Image (tube, helix red, strand yellow):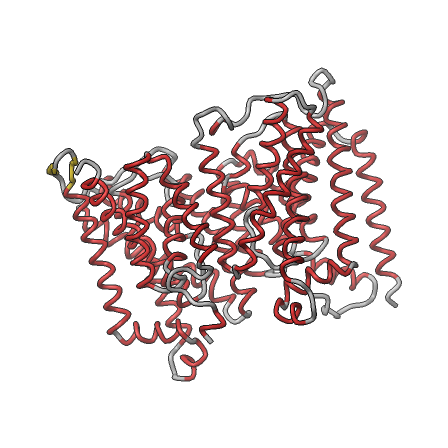
Length: 294
Length: 325
């Protein structure tokens, strides 16, 4: 009981947050073959926008959450116009390298700009819901449960959007085979732009959720980004369902390691886990090699 | 018609080497320290370029190898009685072992999965290093200062001059190896597995052997640079594993040009200078560097060195043929 309840509680909450953080990344890679290494920067932008709106302007949490989403769409469209559109159609291996490198550059610019605008001091978002109750020795905060539920809500909505709306179906068509999708009359570029905007909005709102748990710093997006990459790889790059399953598995793994061995070992365990997964399943849990996709 | 171009190139190279040899008597010591940094980064970038740009394995593990060699050198000097040069050799050997350990799982992986594998290798090493409280690596403060290659009793300007020549010779050796490799069978094999792995394999090039060799040579360069770095500063800090350093060196290769001989040298030269010059601008330094990486990746996906080659062709009267890349 003394270890079981904290592991269960931490695992569920971490899993939900990881899932929320990873969906944007999985969506971008699945549709555009764009491994966005500025993902951590997007998370940080969301957190700081929400911090500014709630702490400086005194608005409620929900307004900060929505504004962070809108700003995220803007950032996504900007990324699309600056990086992705000029590079469209340069062919597969060069596209992969060029976009990854450009996103690394963008990550640096975002981190340095956030440092310049908001300064290096730690910031924390106010909790969305106050209060807590105890189960045995474990204090369970309502905020954690609320954030977990919100993350699950976002995931369900994303899933619904991908399955049932016209745009979502077009997006999945582009993801599975872009050339055939073009032939079926799907406007590829428009779908690309919409995808980038949506996944960035998902990422910045996930950043808000993250900010109500951990302190905000200009570089506080790095560890969540690395975790998100592990989640997305583990689930098979580009598979959203795989990413969600992987997020909860990794959430429970980190919770177990943190509770049993100490928080210090959570990140090393994560990377060791990733190395082992890649050695035995070179394409992740649900992923398939490119040859098999054709 | 084609005779002028190689002669022009040889003339430029000879002139550059002569200027580099005379440099310690011309410029102030501060300038020399910047040049030493340039040589070190050029060696690292050249090794990385071999693995990523030429052999086409998207490895981000080079800085981890660099740091391992450096830490090993420092650790051996501090904890055993071995001289710094002997310790540096042990550091280089460790870097070779580390590159083999990294290369074997990478062979089964493709494309971005190699990036993910090597970045987790890098991060695993970094987090273990930073959170170490047993005193083995000194945690986030790095190793305590120790006696470098040249005794601290030698005056600073004299010491810098010696280090400058060591770095210059290492740089020449690495560049020489790359020049020989480019013309050799092995160099062609690297290029082949980078551009068309399936075709290369079907023409009898062993992917396993060639890729492991690419990792070994790339790791050797990173290890040599790391051991020199550690012995030059007489200490080792985890800062070399930071995201910023990683980006700086990637930027060198992107701006200089992947897969070319000149690219990493050119990129290292430009960015070492820029990075030092921008130190006054503190925060804006990273913004400018990051923007440059974005601009270079989007506008010149092949880097600057093809542009320079085109210019050289233009100078030698062979204009308009850009079939080099």
